[in-house]
Length: 90
Length: 196
Image (tube, rainbow over all chains, first blue to last red):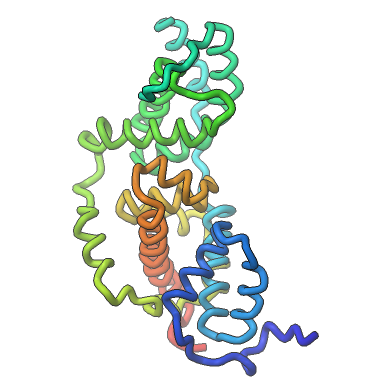
């Protein structure tokens, strides 16, 4: 099977229904679409350049948000303070 | 509170729920609180208040249901009711105004298409964080809930008390605004965003 996903030669350069396609792609990335999403995705990415680009940009943005966003460490004493306050209101 | 008469938990059950279902989420809660308030002390107070409320109303929590979503909803409401007023932030962008602007018919799906995948990949955590933090609170919130915390649209709808359709559209707009910010970072980093 031709898995030529990284070249744009076979993809159409304009998407006839961008709004709907992009909304679908975003739902798939958010894990909201499960029925047949893999097939729909494969087809869109193989055939449509704007969908291909949108998908990969949205995907990488989700990845950097999830993996790179600075985490703020919980102050060490916070959990103890909370437990102490709970004891007081019991 | 629910009209359904729930059974009351014993003290032992309360402690068990609190320790095993509530406390494990303290890291996520603190991160959320910090990203809402941008202040360490406010974030601590907000998390503490949330846990105290959670304990006080523990009988309205159904054991085995999604404790994290339940806690996030309390935190979000506490923030809106108590902290937003006294926030040290300068006046926030009025959400309605932003919503109206982005609700105009031509939500432009192409406006950030010149942002490159490689440029985003190369960004530092602080740059991503700053871009996220610069968004108006309602947009920031949906991105935190979805991308940082992994809530589903349905859970987000419950946490935020808005319909799922609104979650979807707000998330889409939030990401477009974020892409705008990232694009200006990319330009500053010297990435040429206009050409291949």
